[in-house]
Image 1 (cartoon, rainbow, N blue to C red):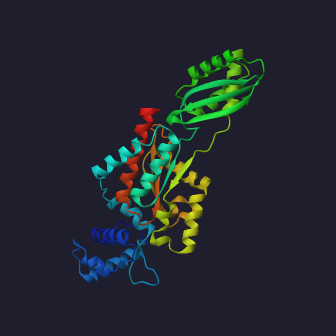
Image 2: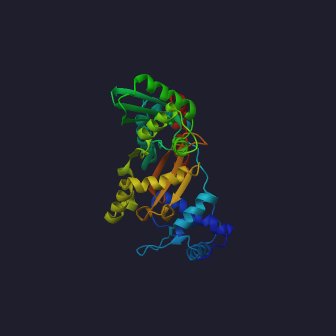
Image 3: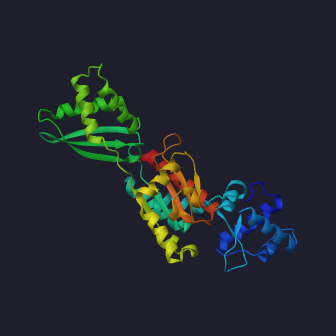
Length: 346
């Protein structure tokens, strides 16, 4: 296989094949390419060009068909050099904004509704991840004395995320003490990422040469006990049946693989976390995910929550031949809608 840049005619033929394959999910023959508007090549030249593209790894050929199928390498070239994004129609954008605006003010309701909405529009599966507690920014912490020796810690994070934990404390701690603890922590840690707060608390408590005041020491210890172990974010998956209805997954084996990947929350989160860490919209094709069960799939993911501090993601998962020119702007717009809602309400 050659990695030499494609000639203009090769790129033109490949783009025609890709667009036809995306639309029809069928192998593409030279006759189909020759009938496409804009291709000014003879049938023989088209056949030779398709043969060259196959030699370079851009086209494959199913055993049962004389037509060609674009490979993962072809889709990557298409995304990076050929594809032209189709802007979302204004009526669709207005409908989506209005629909999400009616989802209420609970973060889980908003994200679940967004996943369902994107799945319906894209006709694929959609995964929306809730804010990761350890990456979200600290907004406020309060402690409630339930009874002597038992405290409820309530941590409010960026994006409307709320964590609650029960903590056993000494029976000498009063409600007024808890107010002071909360005030101290909020003053020192507000707007810091929870992971950074945890690191600072550990550093302060481990500094042997530094004598902590009684208030400081007890407040830090209480915060660590309440929120020491980071929680995994919620995952809102909708539209699995949309995805399985695609021709690529009519085979029982392929269907089982995709279902396994979608239901393996830890593995799915690992892939999505890597996209969030890139701070931009990301398209992952097939084996780029390093998940064998997703080798026949494409994934489009966009972060939400702020350019510098993304806290979650909106992702569409579908077959490799997904209509990326439509899905990329859809995912982008949805992430922006969620970000705007979180900024407004939380």
